[in-house]
Image (cartoon, rainbow, N blue to C red):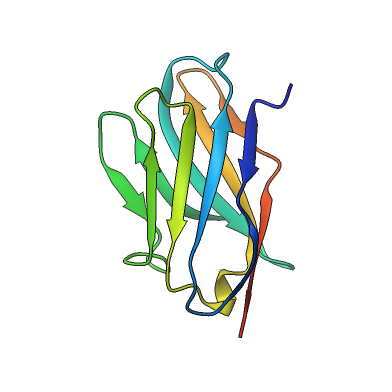
Length: 115
């Protein structure tokens, strides 16, 4: 019944890569934007990347040049390709989908980057 389900998190060494996926329920309609946020222990949730449907892609300065957000044509899945990972990237990553009426959040997937 979960409308957004993240996967692909795990443990990776610094400098490594990881790709996160977010499966979006077909019941979610009129999607305007899709994106990723993250929350590290003891910190507030922060913006990572967004993909505006029919528009531009935006990244947080901290991940620019290392992370890439994308989606399939049917908008059933949102991806976050993470390269050159750093220990400071360690966090729970959350998928976000914005529609004309509502915003939706996934339960998160843990990403841990070791030194």
